Image (cartoon, rainbow, N blue to C red; front, side, top):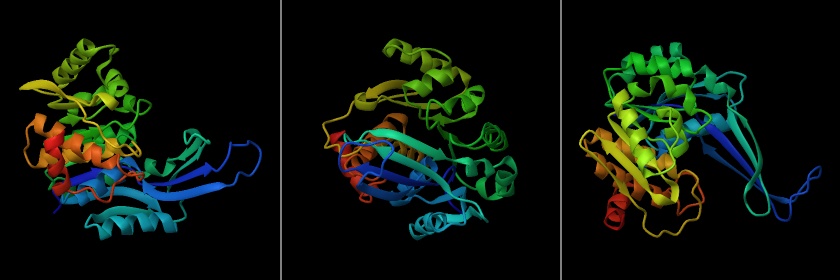
Length: 305
């Protein structure tokens, strides 16, 4: 059985970028790209490319892109036996339109299908999940699914990627049930229930989360690196200079590195460094998952983190 089970979303990402200034109410010549995405799916692919033993529980539609996303993970060695394809349904889609400066102008996110990852579906696979060493949850899950999973699998390490500030409140009441959480500053504010203005506030917020029951905490700080904390200590790891092509997906590879570190029993500081190296590799690619990411490449970069 897989060492790691990820429960979360699989998206189809569609992005349109105009060649010239975006004109509303008209058809704009440009370039359209499609890719497999979703926080849970991205974490899963990263772990597979890092050599991890990984299974995923999710749902897609029975459309070609959804079936293709499942097949893609399977070819990477992921156990996809818990990924269902719902008849007559469209897979989750994130549709974004960029402006001429390559910034997102507007987007439509159709994630309704993820509501089908219910407590009942998770319960169906509980015997398989329980054989994993770590369970990872994607903050796109419903509050009911998050509550059920953390209660049902309270006897095993559970990791949470909150995904966004808009979705973090779903985990606010149960933050202490997670063994490990990787929020950014805004998500940490929501989960801890306090505003974070400086490093002193950050440490107080971290203390609150630790008092709730969190054992390992990694707060990502964008260009300032990461703050890590456990019962043995705390610290910051600052990033080195990097050739950034795109920051998209960097957080997902960081989460993957944390989960790998948990499975392998690494200490918290070393996991933080591992995550920083993984993120640096991801940002060198325009894709959400850099196909060149691997355990060997991460370890080679560790000397430069």
